[in-house]
Length: 90
Image (cartoon, one colour):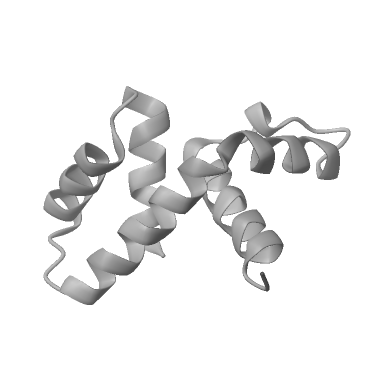
């Protein structure tokens, strides 16, 4: 989960692609576990694929706060949580 949160944060901070952000995160966190990388890559790709929908759901759920009120890590966590909550049972 940490890898995915960090990669999503890099995407938002530097407008990187999914693969670039994952490469940067793996290097930054010194990730050696291939299965952890693959799981994070899947999470990042799925969250980015549904980001507009997820962000709309979060904006409704967070009233009176805005998603933009939170830092990159919190936003990334909330997006992953929302994705898993909405799409994990389908």
